[in-house]
Image (cartoon, rainbow, N blue to C red):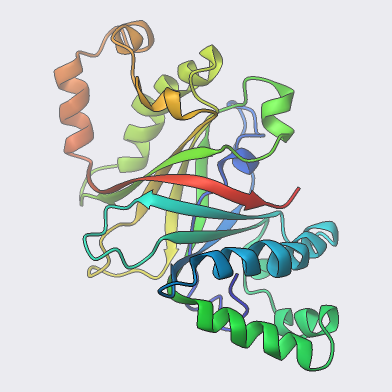
Length: 271
């Protein structure tokens, strides 16, 4: 959890895929902004850090969800990171229905009211000692698949998500490639029950040519076993019968570079 009035200028992503999946495929995606905070637990304090998130900050965020100040909050562990320096091992996800709400003004004051007197300051100090916020990002939902069932649309976030970070290439409509080629593929997987949802996000902040990615896709799954066969052999011929596999690969590779590929595992989330 990150409590800061600077959240809008230094904000972050991830991907609360179940909240996005509630829209129908024929509709434009809901207005949704996601703030991701990448966390590194202090040596020997992983258990303590997770306890703070679950026992102190989850109830705070649940209250904000109940008050309709945010859509959802989740904590993910990143057991397999693409970062060779391993500079984070957890990510908190804060979901909002508009960009202004992502700034979260008055958040510190709200926390102090929930934990009056010296308790609030003490809890914040203890949390800072248990983990470091490595970086933050703000993302905007661009598109997503339709849910297979009403339960999928309204249920809790998926236990496992695959997060792929992309750097789009100049002169190519990367979003069109995702929408025209890959969204139908993932919609078929959702329909068959092999996937919970698929979402496409665009990075809002930070940005610039020095940043390693500007888009991300999120594949949400119900079980670890679903990772074994990501794309069945007959999938592409059935969904994209007029496009060869080599052509699909070429169009994809010329539209973006895949810079990070990670598995995130849900630890806890608001209702």
